Length: 113
Length: 119
Image (cartoon, rainbow over all chains, first blue to last red):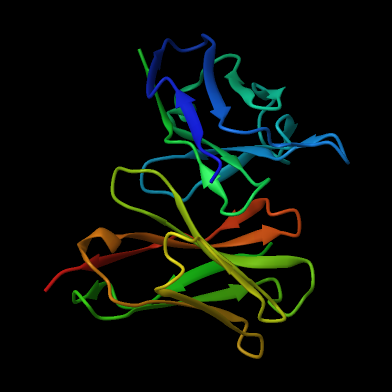
C-alpha cells in the first residue's frame, strides 16, 4: 500500500495568516506517461463528508476559493491556505489515487488562533 | 449534480453482516464513466477505502477487508450495496458511498451513515 504521511497533525493559525500542510507518499504518485500526480486534497468540516478541494496535486475543484492551492510532485506535496478564514476550520486529508488500494493521509486539523 | 444517499441499519451485532445501500440520484450507475465506492471512517480517525464496483459488476477491494466484503450494483434501481460479514467492534464507523472517476479520483461523497457494532 502507498502510505500517506501528513504533517503537522494539527495547526493553529491566526485569521488572515497562511496555513501550510504537508503530505508525503511512500512511493511516487507521478505517472510518467501523462506527467500527472495522482494526489488530491479534501476538506472535512465537523459532522460533514469530505469535500474535494484539489486534484492532480494542483488543480482547484470548481467553486473552491483561490486562497487554496496545491503544489508538489512525486512524493512530496503541500496544501496552502493563503489567508485563513473562519470557514476554513476543518480537517484536511491528502489522498493518492495512483495505486490500489486508494489511501489517505491521517489528516491535519486546522484551527483559529 | 449527482447525489448519493446511504441507508441501512445503524446497529449490527458482532459476528453478523453489515448491509448498506447507496441510492444514486442525478446520475446513473449504468453509465461507463464512473466507479462507485465505499469508504469508512471510525470516529475521530482517518479514512479507509473499502472498495469499488463498475457498472459491469467488476469489483476491486482493499486487501485488508477483501475476505469479508462484497460490493454489488443494481443498475435498474440505481443502487450500490455493501455487505461486510463477521463484523466486530473495529468495524464501527461512518460509512460513505462515493463516486470515483475512471482515473480513480473520488469526486463526490454521500453524507455518510453511522454503523455501530455492538451486542
